[in-house]
Length: 29
Image (tube, rainbow, N blue to C red; front, side):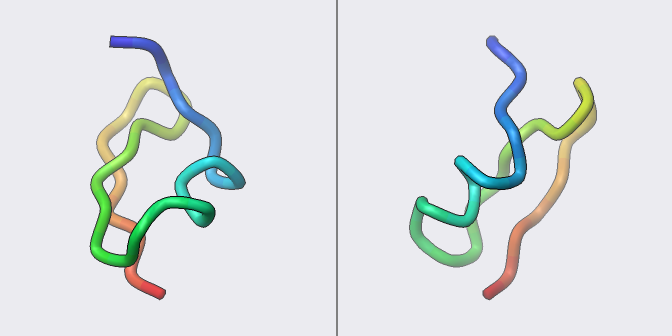
């Protein structure tokens, strides 16, 4: 899996699990 940036995660739907700095992060908008 490629590491995604927080900016890309914000563009996705809310409650989306992305990888920031190779670490699992849950983005809740």
